[in-house]
Length: 544
Image (cartoon, rainbow, N blue to C red; front, side, top):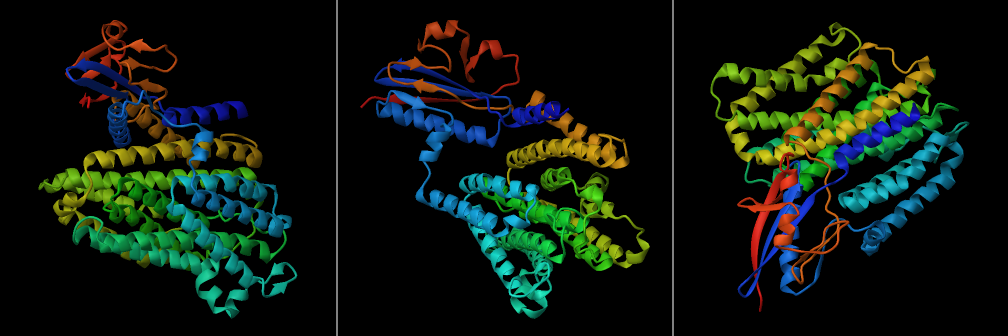
C-alpha cells in the first residue's frame, strides 16, 4: 500500500515536472561563414520553452562567433549550481541554519517528533526556495524576527505552563500587532486594501503603475502578517496547557488563514515570473472573499479561540494532509480566477446578454465559494450573507460592464494559458499527495482507507476531473510534456553532439539518420506523428 502510494506520487511529479526537450542543430557552410538552423521540440509550446530556445540561439551564435567549440545546454549539476551561489546566498543559508539550530536548542524540549521533523525539513526547503525566489529571503527574515519578538514579549510573564499567553492584554505592541489574532486581522485588512489597489491600478495609467505596485506591497505585507499570526498561534497553543499545542491547521479558521496566504503567495510568485500585475485584481478577489468568510466565522462562531484537538485530529497524517490539500486548493483557486479573467478577455466584444449571463453567474459562484464550508443554516446570520451576495453581484456586474477596458489591460492569452496550466499542475500534484495522505489518516482514525462519504467521493471526482484535464492537455498540446535539454552541441568543425551518441557530421549523413529539413525548420521524421510543437530559427554567422 505504502509503496504503491509512493510510486503514484512519483509518477504524477514525473509526468508534470521531468523535462524532456529535444534540441536540433544544423550547420551549413556558406560563402564567408556558416548558416545555423536550430529547432526545439516539445509537446507544449510554453513561454518558458520559447525563452529557453531564444537564449540557446543567442548563446550558439555568440560562441560560434567567438570560435568556441562547445556549447553546453541543459541544467548544470548540483555541485555546479552550488558553486555558482553568491555570498548573499551563503549568508542566507547560514542565517536559516542558525535560526533552526537556535529554535531546536531553545524549544526542542517542547516539540514532538512531528514538529522536530518540520523544523529539520524546513531548513533545506527554505534555503532552496530563497535561492530560487529572492523575494522570499526578506519575507523569511522579517517573519522570523517578528515571531521571535512576539515570543520574547510573551516570555516576560510566566505561569505554570510557561509563558503567559494572556500577556498581550498588558503589552500594546503584542496586543495590536503581534498576537495571533491581531496579526490575522491585519492580514485581512491588508489583503482588502491590496485588492482595492490592484483594481485601481487596472484602470489608471499603464501596467505596473503606482497603484498596482502598492497593491503588490500590501499583499506582501498581508502574507507576512498571516505567517506571523500562524507561527505565534502555534506558540500560543503550547502555552495554554500540557498536550494542547499543535500546528494551526486543525480547524476551519486556521485552514482559511492558510488558504489566504498560500493563494496570495503563489500569485506573487507568478506576478514576478510573468512581469505583470494586471491579474492581481482578479486573484485577490477570491482571497478577499475568503477573508470575508473568515471574519464572519470569527464573529459568529468565536473560531479564533484555540481549542484542544479531538482524538481523530491528533494523527500526524492529518498534519501532512491538510497543508498539502490547501496548496492544491490555493493553486486551483488561482487558476480559476485567471480563467475568469481569460473569459472576460474573450467576451470583451460580446453584446448579447444571454451570452454574458453564464459568465456573470460564474463570477458570483466564485465569490460565493466560501459559503460551502458552512455547517449551520443561514438564518442566524442571514443579513450578513444578503449583504455579501449584494456586494458580489455588484462586483461581477461592474466587471462585465467595463469588460472591454479590462480586456485591453490583461496580459496576452498565451500568458493566461501558461499561468493556468502551471497553477493546475502544482495543485494536481499536491492534491494527489493530500488524497493519499487522507486515506492513510482515515485508516488510522476510523479503521478504513476509504468509506465513500460525500467528502471523499467529491475529492475523488475532483481528482479525476483534473487528471483527465492534464492527460488531455498532454495529448492535444495545450499542456506541457516533461522537458529538458541534455548534452552539448559542438559548433566547431560542423559537428553535432547528441546525448548518448557519438559525434556525427552535420549534412547528408545526418539527413539519412532521420532528420528532415523544411520550411518549418529541422524536424525528426520518426517523431512526425507525435504532437510536438516546433520552434525554429535561421542565423548566418559571418567569419571576420
